Image (cartoon, rainbow, N blue to C red):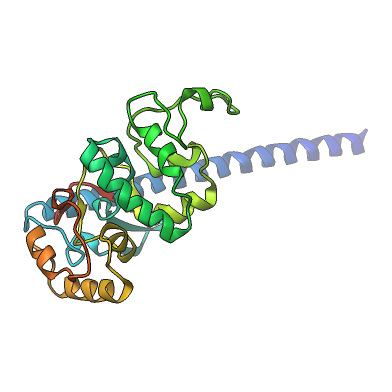
Length: 263
C-alpha cells in the first residue's frame, strides 16, 4: 500500500509538473507572439514614415532615396526586426493585361519578352489575361469557368485584377518553377500603371525596350545611378539609339505603389 501511495503521489506530481510546464510554455509562446506582432507593426510604421517623407520630396522616385535603403537587422527584445521597401512600379504589372487595349498590348509585348528570356511559356499570358479581365471569353491558350470547374477542387475564374502575384499560381499551365522565374520581375497592381524607368531592374528594361542589349543596359543603369531621370523625355534622350520606345504614355519616373517586407 505504501509503495502504491508513493507511486500515486509521484504520478500526480509529474502530472502537475507537466501541466505547469505546458502552461508556462504556452504563456511564453503567447508573449513571443505578441512581441513579434508589435515588432512587425513597428516595421510597418517605419515604412509609412519613410514613404510619407518621400512624398514631400522631388516628383520622381529613384533608388538613391531613403526608402530604397533597407532597415538592417536591429536587435529588439527577444529578437530582431528588419525591413525592405521595393518599388512595385519598377516591375511589369500583370494586371495591365486587363487595362484598355493600348496598354494591354504594350504590357503583353513586354511580358512576352520577359517570359521568353526567363524560359517561361508565353502561352501562359492568355491564361493570365483571362484571369484578370472582366469577360468570360477564353483566349486561345487561356481558360475560363468551363476549364476551372473541372479542377480539383473546382474553381471559378476570378475575372478581376489580382492583388498578389501568388494568385496566378492556379492559372492554367502555371507551374511553381514558372511562377518562381517571373516573380522577381512582375507585380499585381490596380491597372493601369506606368513603368518607373528609374527603378526597373535590368531584366525588366530589356523586356520593355526592344533592341536594348546587356552592355547598353549596364551603361544605362550606371548613368541612372549617377543621375536619375527626372522626366520621361530625359530618359528617352539618354536611351541608346538601338532601343525602341513603343509608347511613352506607359512610362513614368515616379511611383505610387511600393512593396514593404518586414521580418
